[in-house]
Length: 366
Image 1 (cartoon, one colour):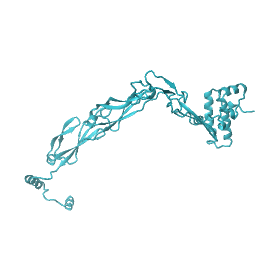
Image 2 (cartoon, one colour):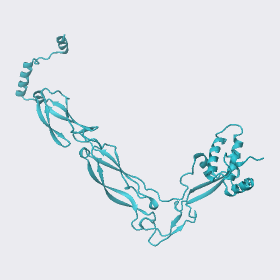
Image 3 (cartoon, one colour):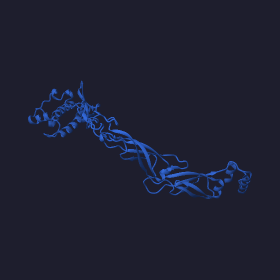
Image 4 (cartoon, helix red, strand yellow):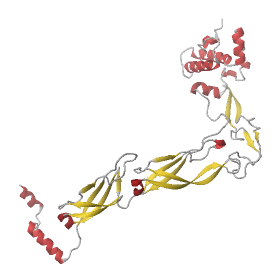
């Protein structure tokens, strides 16, 4: 007695179409000869195929449910020969990957492409935040046909090549059987219809390139490489689909004086060696204007001073970084006779008038 087809697929009698397909996928993966090398796996796989070929066909399933028999001869299985219930390549893909391939459905409205804009800022822009007006070119709905693609009053007709489905189906016969392949109709680009009298402005595309000015708010403290999204300012979608987004990529130009390190800024200032010795006050530039820095007497070269909260605002946070001022002690390359005499007098007073060699210095330590 032939085994019950529902039992082969591990189903209850009268199972719905979705349950039949789900069970078949599970068992086909388990017993496929390329996956399961156990003896008997190939025979089990063929039985599962035959069961699925019958129970997935509404008319055959109805006959089997009523009389317990169904015609499963090769000539009655949709012309697929030895494929034993596979509806061509698409069904194989469906079983092993859980879904149909993309691009085989009739095209409908699709979202437009995203656009990129590179915006260079100054360090001053970054420190305070700024609003920038930028100009872009993007695709908008055609103003003449309002996105329809045809001239006023012209109608669209069904594509005669795909009969309005947006797909072209071809059958390829091989030694392994017949394979069906579905591709997007290239005559109508998957739309299912053709335009007899295309709009002269957009040539039937429904979209045209236009220039647009957009205001972009740049928050204070933004960093190089940050990407800002402006919703809905990309290209408009085909067939009335929503517009994509505009992404603004931020770069920051090098500053003449300042260097940025995180939210801190660095600057070097030159201080005459006399002022470094005696101490002084100097005016230091900041991103907000200027500040007075007190340089204590005896300041050494490369000393760094910190100006609290004079740096970059924390991006989307509270407070600022600091500004660091590095002192570069300037020693004159040329001096006058009077200046030389004064320096020699100083050297004599401090005992530095005679230069000691390195051995003398080492001996003096011990």
